[in-house]
Length: 221
Image (cartoon, rainbow, N blue to C red; front, side, top):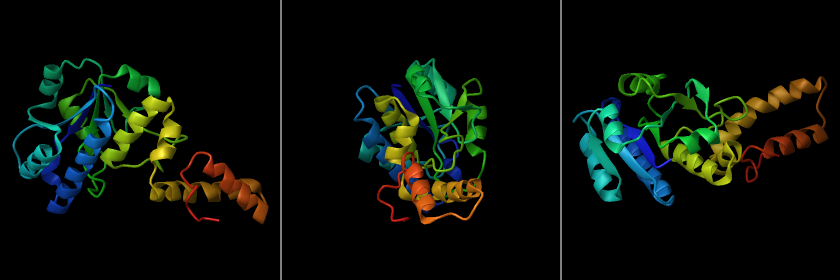
């Protein structure tokens, strides 16, 4: 993986507050990715549009590259033949082997506050209809997987380093995402007991969740 590409095809739907968040996330992504030798961050907008000047200022400030051109043309110009598009509703679960195979990974440049389900899929279909879409899942679900661009990039880099997506997610996972997943898992695990839980049961459930969720520093028990 030598390229992390941020697709800004939906930049025009963002409010000023969201543009600020988007710029920060791309800047954080760049600071994470540049630590990996030979990998670059490139933001791509299909055309000049409202809000792009904010990203232009961010790119000059932080050192990542901003290109204004159709995504497929940029991919061709960069010479990337093996491309995957990250999408929480993608066709396949991402594996470390996919990251090792890919020359470029495309992330949707949409902040998590923008409530439009499927927009990443739409951008992919418009720009790279031939590229496979992949989702990061944690034990069969996207719940608990962070949605911020910088956190996704950090998971991808860490997964390549440690050879495990689950371990990478646990290391990068913000507390709120760990709590959200634990909140879904605990009722299911309690139901599986088939009886009223004891304190010992609760402790064991917490210990089991702690092996794959970032719960070490959370005072849940």
